[in-house]
Length: 257
Image (cartoon, rainbow, N blue to C red; front, side, top):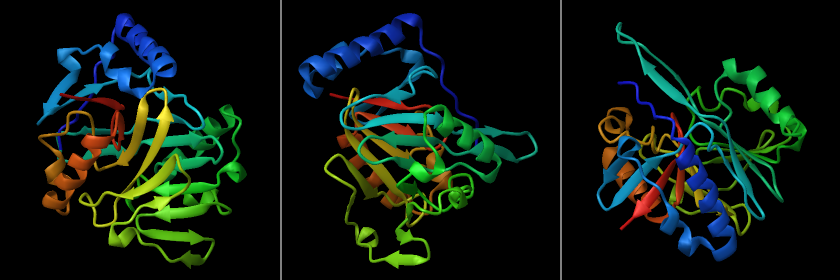
């Protein structure tokens, strides 16, 4: 797999993002695309959609009642010997409930604990941990949160007690009216994503490896267990999300015709 990266946006683009947040808070989500600034070097077209990569400074999406923060953007970098380094994106959802989406690999333990502490969050404050799928670079620190409700793929558990779940049947797990866990299979058979509504950027989808990165059109199929199913999941995401947080890269905004 080739390494995929985003360019940092200019100061003007960062200012445009702040204007986007201001307009959303004043006028609502229907107006967010009127002030969008696009750069051809960080924009790809996917059918009727454009994907616009955000910058390393655009990792927080405040909102009411929930905010979303990317604690660590994932990455993937290829080596000439055929190996590659990879780590999954770690995201935090804060509001009436505190939700951690993917925990990174075991090597991320100290970083994760420090990132949470910097935000005034301890392991015991995490009420729900969602592992978008079972790969080690996404669920390597589940043991840090023994008191949290766990959703890993289609499994829902509290401690060693597993709850009935309809995720395997394609049904949504409702956390509350603003946060939900959606089945988004394809990369693996049990992938899920977390949808958060009401942020300054509109609806945010924390997608795991449903999307590897903002510009993965030429590569995602190589890592998919079922490309047909994953294509359907991807199209649904592009139809509904305003911002998508991929599993191995920076967040990107979805623009529609």
